[in-house]
Length: 406
Image (cartoon, rainbow, N blue to C red; front, side, top):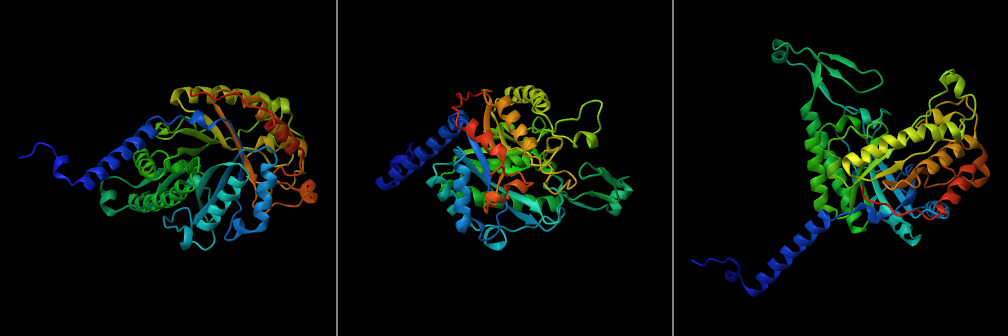
């Protein structure tokens, strides 16, 4: 009996096996030595969230991205979504099976546009719910069985939604969750392949999916499988306030957050009173300095840099008090460009030079941009033609200090 496997192989087979072993070794070494500080400081913006089939392929899209890049951006986060039918329906489709979302070809076109403009890319596919329930609250319940009733099980506490509470006669439906996770894994794998093909620098694994985050085993498995497909850096977009809650940050390279940190009203004022006036930059800075200390501790604890993959406010008076709010949420509040520029200025002043902080991809710049003449009446997050645009231009023109690994 031969005591070596290799000599039993032909010359060609030995060469192929050697190449395979070498490639695997290189891939493992690349992942083990992955250093997110090599990405530098991200001067970015989120682009294309309003995308529907055809939106990225239009002449408006190219013009929009160019105007975004002209602010001094060197990164773009291309973010798009598919939709579940409802928050408790685990079935959803993507790519060619979803005729409403942007196509694979359009995504590749958007990446190509970014490359032409000298931009690095984050690809951020998101799962939404068509019934307008926030994706953080997706969950699946089923009726209690007779056997469970005999064991004293008559319901289960539901921690999600506007009004958490007991679900009488209902318990968590693990079979439905199994279906959802299978779909979600396939969804991410599909777009991870595009990210790998196009050599995208950073891939985001999900956005504000609070109700899934406690499932550490499934998240680790999804991330492990994505690593087999995609060789770049990985991140996940937690919601503000949940950065310390995730037990699986070690599996990704960068901690990302939706950094919509609300500025509380003065102690002698109600929120209703506070939003009637422009939030001062001083109030914003005071709140963000507290947040900065908390995030520095989180970065140190997990030994990961932090990226504000979403942040910003609408150009509506009082928006800094509820920065996540959509422009039509408080229609009684007037347009207020100073409110928005104060929030931008405060964010940039507080976080710019922190060595653990990786930068911004602000929310959000549409694929079809409004005309500059309409900017004065715009209530949205986009800063095109508004005073916050000059604030960001001035900051993005500055050199950023080197990032360090925490």
